[in-house]
Length: 123
Image (cartoon, rainbow, N blue to C red; front, side, top):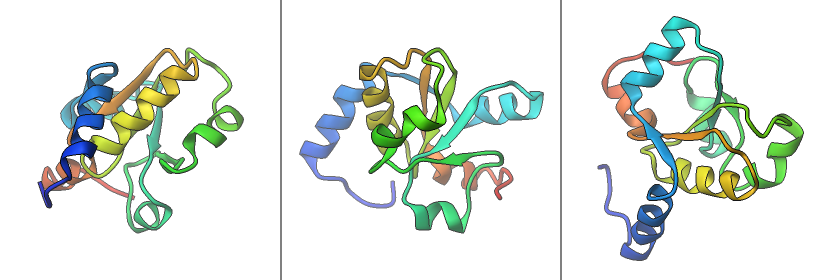
């Protein structure tokens, strides 16, 4: 981990992770390579997304995803894989989307940091 997160934030993330499904970086890469159909959502800040992002990802930042998701994803059963830097913000966002009625939301543990470490392609 690049830096130490504060304990109350980690507690919030741990609680969210107990309620959401998670997947691995390797599994997402396999699914992209197979051409599986799902919505890949980058929940990082706009400046982070502009620098680089996973192939085919759309951007809905953690600060606005709850407000803007319904305009971008109408189907409550649509499969969405959310990712961020390391898997914390994506877990929090996935938890909130589930509370909003989305039933097929997955958080990518490891985030773009692990994706980069494995030298997987970026746009």
